Image (cartoon, rainbow, N blue to C red):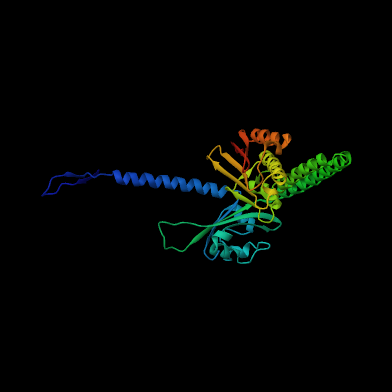
Length: 346
């Protein structure tokens, strides 16, 4: 509401002009503007005090704005800002001198990378700043520089420790192998089976060591099975990419080793045209479950006695325990079948 007082004149007495209007929309717009201004001020405080270097550059790499961390890293004054482009001010070791322009031309390949500068290691992220209010304005880009030197040093130390651990474990495997060979010379069948199992465990250990004992791809378990097939024999894999934590990886590796040994002695890998179909499916979004199936065909007719007691026990109990599920071995006339269902541990 607006009120305007009008003074009296000879022709007109004193009066008030009152204008009423609906200010709902204006009030709403003003409120939204205040909220956006508050958000912008809060964001500015975050950027200003961030430990990472944050810059705003034009498409030529010239710095338009930057926080104190970026200015300190580059060794520049902010008033005025230098005219040189950022890839001249930040000469990264091992990178093309035009790394900024290369990154904005190939965002999928160069938008995020790591590089060394002044004996420190940095993670660098470059992204276009969207401006929906001025879609035809000159493009500008954000550049974020994070010092990740401590993480890189920690990774290097971890690699050294894992390498040393792997070396010592391999030495233990070698000593145990020697003891088995010497102690079981008069029992060659038992000796060879035990050494074969030990070799399988060593291979699983090597795979997990390469992945720093975090997890490993399920497909790496079947490399040895595929190596056993020859001629017209087939090993068919069907399943999504899946990474298993160490205990589950080792359990399934041991089971697959027993299955492979059995297939070589009595099953599909004994016949010229034997086939092993290995499939797995994964369900769920939170707690994921796996359905695994090993199915042989094209080999000799299978009998339960063809599988050793230890192998049967190992496949059924160890796998079902590690996967919190159930396992089952079926001796079909056309070939052995091993299936289990369980929970995938994260």
